Image 1 (cartoon, one colour):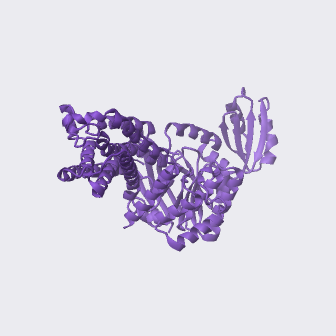
Image 2: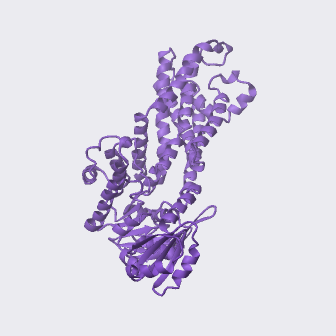
Image 3: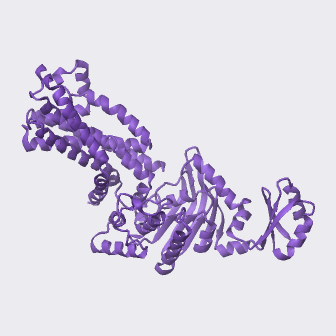
Length: 329
Length: 256
């Protein structure tokens, strides 16, 4: 039985904004599950429902065997939640933040003191622990966020964009710790991300969400292998008619799919290296500026299921989210 | 039991904020003290009009200004909640099994504790300026209770407002609009008998006036019947305000 079980989940905000449009998910205990999608795709709305911070409009969701609507208290005891932005209390010291969080879970005495000490050590925060967190760096605050999420040894840890806004070094520390929690402590981790690399490197299972719908799911390698071929990206000058290029490419037998995105045309083919001469030949007369070949990535998976490039969708989502703050982030 | 434990933990957190960043608390204490220092001598002779229960205007002002501090100290309490909401701290707490009642109650309790402290400071300054407290220690405790109740009531209203209209400027605008009229439509500065009749009439339904009369009655150690009567009204008003805050919190959660 999955530890997180979601059926036909819907979340609509006044407007109306359909943030989540009937998604199904199941997460196996002890694994890392990545919900990948651009800004505004419905990731945070989903995780907020699962963490009992928001009520679903329709559908059902069970977390650690508890219903998100009927038994939210049961869920709260079983989960840790780390929000997208740091929620450290900047007027308190690192130690005080951890003690406070522990007390909200009913912990106290020697057990709590030991747990706080262990977490400060684990996240390399001992030296700064007695200082107010106001002066801490973003990376340190993020580590403290994670430590607070773990204070009560939860069965499931929800991480909403855990490495968002972190520098590469802090991000690497965060990833290492997430991986360790899963591998060594057997914790189930549900993370949302708009970083393809993060999902690729961390998640055992990935679901891609776009405009409130799950458009693909599987293991990262399974999804990439499913594309069945290399990606050849062709970039044309601004005056080139990419529709013409697309027509010419579709006529080639070795080409599986053709996707046009602005002045870039992506083609998928079983053997990219051998196909390039024929591709370039078919485009003679057009102002082809760049040809690049790559093995499939999650970006390609996203492109194949949505017809859009992930970075472009992310930018569009970011602009959209500005007008309806937090609604479907 | 759990609710009380959570309430203590969360209230302590907010009080630590106050003591580490005391500017707001200090300002809300200093303001009534300045009023006491200025208005006391300035309007000193007003007591000759009669109806002031004392010949010293400073003495008359002390319990009223203690209530003023309670009012000003609690009216913007919703800002703490709003800041916690903006910083994601509220969400972090909501994802724990913490008592929801304690979560909202902590912001109200914080107001109550701070205003009791402010009232004490004003009474001490009044004593230094020669005011007498005929009501003694029991009178002092009642003044604290009145300040706590008034502070809790307006703290709850401010928090309810923060949950309904989550904007800092809205809280400031609405509370500024409400507080000053409530001060001047009460017997805080002037004896009831000396108030224009229409103000006297409005004052009878003004919770600020209930708190002032309760505090003043106890401070002077007179009219304990009135103290009980206004105490009951104020407690009822405070309970309604707290319920409004709890309802607003329920609505806030349902909208999330």
